[in-house]
Amino acid sequence: MTHRVPSHLIQKAPSERTRVQPLTRERVLAAALAIVDREGLAKLSMRRLGADLGVDPMAVYHYLPNKAALLDGLIDAVMIELGVAPARESGQRLSDWVVETYKHFWDQLVAHPNVLPIMDSRMITGEAAMLSAEQVLIEMERAGIASGAAVQALTLITTVTIAVARTRAAREETARDPMQVVVRRAAIEDLDPERFGRVRAGFIEAPVKDWWASLEFTLRSLVASLERGDAPHMSMPAATPESMNDRH
Image (cartoon, rainbow, N blue to C red; front, side, top):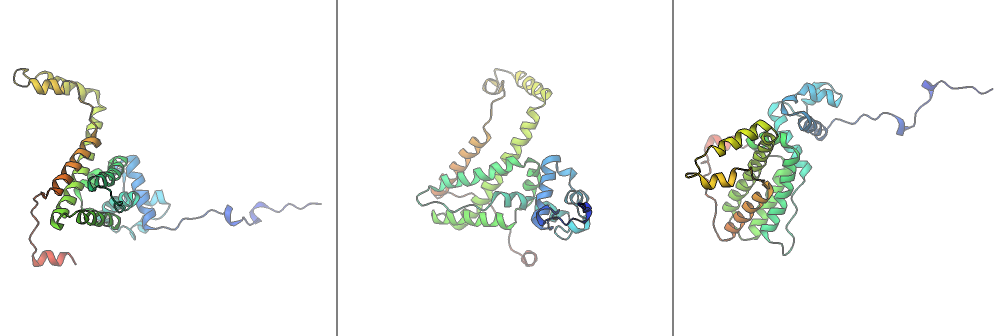
């Protein structure tokens, strides 16, 4: 006679057991980014994060102790996913390297449009982002660009890239609203053709925008200007005892 062993007494092989992933900062940030990507920033909370991760919300606070840390963490998650900018190849023009590097950044911003308002309003300070920033400054130094001009250019290029990506996201959302399209066309048609002839001719039909092509033109123009010895003029805040203490 064959005896059947009850199923609850059978020990499962390790590969069949349910594996509980350890909670890490990277896993928490990935879950937060997934929520924002799917449902928007308004749906993100510690309670929601805990539910999606299958843990008590208080466990999340160990990695992200407050809202500021959560927002900064979202930026960090995007930059970690992007990865660190590689060094410029031998013989590669600085302008080509900058365009290639920021095209990857652009693609990442386009892939995560719901994070753009945060990136537009907060400093980018995570390690991955800082390593990429360091590489940009290294490449500009290699090209003979003064350190002050390089820092200003880095700030400007990054700011412009985020701003254009955010404008693109907002305009494309508006373009999906048929009423907005009608209102826009009516506003152009109402312009006096004698006073605004060129504007009416150029914008009576909504122009098809290649946002990246426009940004690439801007990046190449800026790098060419830097290589000629020009530099953006940006005033830096004066150091005070209080501001020095804030940095430590």
